[in-house]
Image 1 (cartoon, one colour):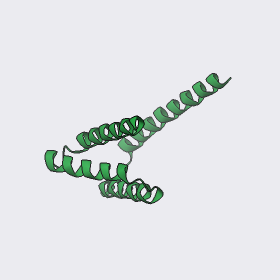
Image 2 (cartoon, rainbow, N blue to C red; image 1 turned 60 degrees about the vertical axis):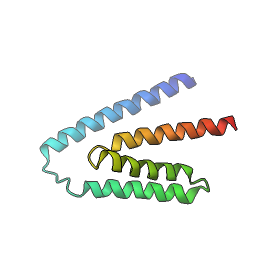
Image 3 (cartoon, helix red, strand yellow; image 1 turned 90 degrees about the vertical axis):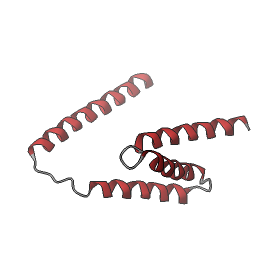
Image 4 (cartoon, rainbow, N blue to C red; image 1 turned 45 degrees about the vertical axis):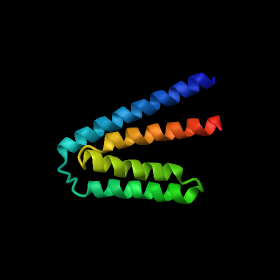
Length: 104
């Protein structure tokens, strides 16, 4: 049964997610781990995702929307508060872009 299969896959995914979070939380409190340099990893991840999106398609609109929205929000909100507004702006612009493409 396809519905039961999808339900069980979702259920086990959620259980794995919760178990992984619990184990990670416990390990984080017990093990002395330094998180120095993690911000560089996230920056590298986003640069890699941008380059991959740029090279994989001829439509560079979504990549440009992401970069421009992030820069504008960084200038408006500053380095500490720009992430959530930029993600909201990117999501809104991509939805509007898609709706505009459907009407054409």
